[in-house]
Amino acid sequence: MAVATMHEAEAAPEYPAIKPGMMGMYIFLASEVMFFGSLFATYFYLYGSHIQWPPPAPTTTPEFYVNWYPVPVINTILLFSSAFTCHFGASRSASANRRRFFVLWTATILLGLAFEFGQLYEFISAFGRGLNLTTNSFSSAFFIMTGFHGAHVLGGLILLLLILYRASRGQFSPQHHVGVAAVTLYWHFVDVVWFFLFVILYIGVALFR
Image (cartoon, rainbow, N blue to C red):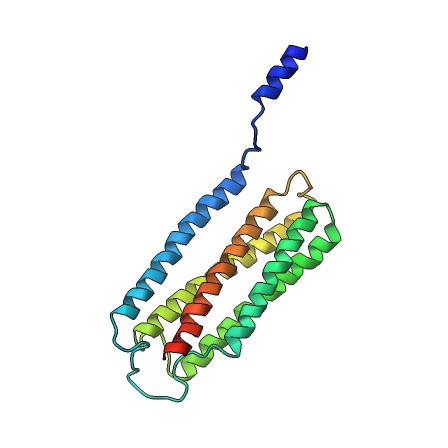
């Protein structure tokens, strides 16, 4: 018996294996990194191929290009705040604190919805100033990059709602919370992507315009 126990201990892996759900999320996010990486590469190509960036618009209107303040700053605060509520909500679920999980996870969803409404408001405001998808190279890149990011945030909100529904049915526990961890990882990814979008599309353009 002692020998058998020793062999079992020796056969046990030194590190815990990655759960299939987490591995799937890692692979998915790797593809997403390549997707957004291609968008950023295209943007820098356009930037390098123009003498003036953003290029001049076909018409001159007041405040034609996007501004980094106030809506983008507020959106950044909202999305980064949701990263904290999502992270601490996930950690609370792992410790089986259901009440705090529901409160923090619901706060994450509300902050994400507020971000989406802020982005929609900015798009409508930009359209009102004459900025649209076909105005020039910068506007095309801006709407495609922020639009795809907004679509990813929307997908994240659907995943958050799905996890909240499953948690309400008691499908997670300290030993089984891969879904919570995977969605939290995805939500952090969209936060990081927004950081680079904000710095490049808003702050960068404001500094060098």
